[in-house]
Length: 145
Image (cartoon, rainbow, N blue to C red; front, top):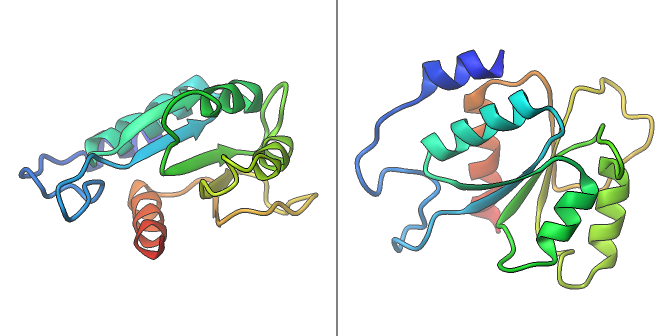
């Protein structure tokens, strides 16, 4: 479902028209997508890239945590909760315990109607969501940071 929405909302923009670009022309915002469903992860990355964002991917919390320990940190993390090896709740606990990683904002993407366990996150977006709602949520949060 997201894949169809991604292709239908893809746009061609003029240089500098992407929301992911900083007003001063700096590099595009980097977003780490932590999602174990390959189709969903690919669709999310295609959508974000069509709006000018740079994307990184991880299939679970362990891979994401390893990726965060290396190199430049992302500007935002999109986090699915139901993940193998290290789920979203465990990932977030580990992230918050790390002084270097704790400041990276997290947008939780969840299909779970009622969360069995609360999670400390900057934003929560329920699946399914429209591509426009995702971009709007990312941009609203980015403007506040």
